[in-house]
Image (cartoon, rainbow, N blue to C red; front, side):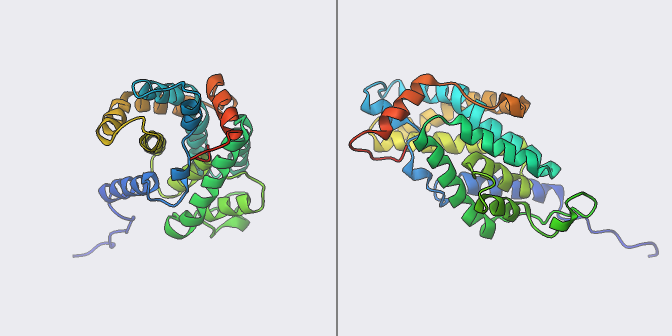
Amino acid sequence: MSGAPARLSGPPAEDRTLDALLVSLQLSDSAFPSGMYTLSHGLEGFVQARAVGQDTMPELLADLLRHSVGPADATALALAHRAVSAGDWDTLVEVDQRLYASKLNRELRQASARTGRQLLDTAVLALPGAVRDDSDSDNSSDSGEGPVARYAALVAAKRSPGCQPVAVGVVHAANGVPAAQAVAADLFAFCSSFVGAALRLRLTDHRRAQTTLRGLAPVIREVTAAALRREAADLGGCAPMADVMSGRHERAEARMFAS
């Protein structure tokens, strides 16, 4: 047979889709060493104030998704994913700084930065992503450095806070996970962590926990779609009662969780 040999263009689309799914599963796994198991995401503060019970815990979680996590963390993740995909590092740093500043309580800021940095420490080794070719851009001097390592260097240099949703967005984008899948996966990870805290606080049992997670699927879809539509100027949630509970939790005499 004559003719030019076929060009190799990377793995088939089906393999890339499956690999992206595996990356998002790995990042959303509670076994990933980011320290999420140390957080209740404000739930312990509500329990201490006797402001939530077994029946109202799922409603509280849905409200936090819609009014706090979605407009803040999920939006930052979507914007970070977009910035990395475009090679726009200035915007990435701006998003990270905006998200950090939008967290009014010290423990929430510290928790986000701590888990983000711990996630990066592992991701640099386990999920570095493809090396970006910047030879045709103004950042040609940075070619050969993968997005995850480059972002980790910005965090280490204290140019970017390293908030967990931004770190997740960078890792997902670097590994070819679509933005919608990345946002939805991280929202599910948040829900799983929140419900896990509810288990340890005796607000639910294992069967109710799984029912709660499945019941939140429509909310996760809704919040994901909204996050993907927002711009940087829209970033920031509004959940005053959650901020109050977090502030009280910071000063509690005894705490099981860091947030």
